[in-house]
Length: 308
Picture (cartoon, rainbow, N blue to C red):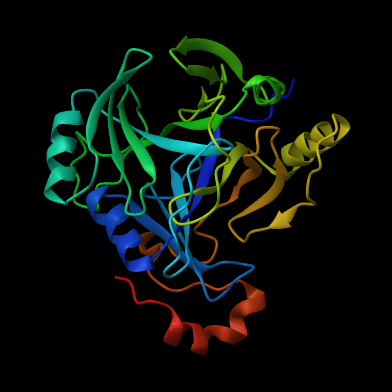
C-alpha cells in the first residue's frame, strides 16, 4: 500500500465559456483565481485555476473553457460531484448567497451525517458545500466573509457501474473504506490532509458518461515532491497500470493513468506552486503562457475571451 498520497490536489473540468465560469467561481463562490494560463495541448483555450489565497493543494478547481462546447452526457465512469468544506452553521447563508446569484438546483442534503448544500455550476456540473471542522485559512478577497468562506475541497464523488476494482485501487493508493450510506461508499486517507475523502456512488445500470461542458476531465491526487511521485509511478506500473511519463505542468509535475472504472487519475506534486512566475499578491491577474506557446502571446491576447 502506498503512503505518499495525501489526498486531493486539484480537479479539472470542462466548460463552455470562460467569462461565465470565471464569474461563478470568483463571485458566487468567492474563490481566488490563482492562475490564468492556457491549455498545454490546445493553447487557444484557457486553463483557469481557482482556489484559496495561494492555490494550496487540495483547494484548486481548474477549468478548460472550450467556447460553445455541448453539455456532457452524464453517467458512470466519471467524477459526478465535487464538494467543498465550509464552516459549520454556514449552509443557510450560502443558500441565500447562491440564490441571489441565480445558481441552479440548490438543495439541502445529508450524507454520512454531514449537512450539505448541493448546487449546479454554470454548465450543469454538480457541487456541494459540506459543513465541516476545517482550520485551513480561507480566501476572503472574493467578498465572502471568513465565517462562511470555502476552506478547500472536502471530497469528490465518483459514479461507477461497479466499485470493486476502483475500490481496490484506492486502497492501494492509501485510502481506507470507512463508511457507507445508501448507494455511497466512503474512502479516506487516515493521515492525509483536509481533502482526503473520496466517495463512490454505485450505479449498475447507468450509461457511460461522456466528455463535454460540465464534465470532470481528471481528478488529481497530491504527493509532496517529485521523489514521492516517482515512487508512486513505479508502484502503479509494477501493478499493471499504464502510467504516463512525468510531465512538467509549470506549477506542478504530473503523471496520469486511467482507473478501472473509467475515471482519469493524475498524481501531482505540491511543488513548485503558483507563485513561481507571479508575485503572490497578484496571482491570476496576468496571462501566463507555457514556454512553448510564448510566441503566440499577441495572437492569444487578441483571441481569448476577455475575463475580469
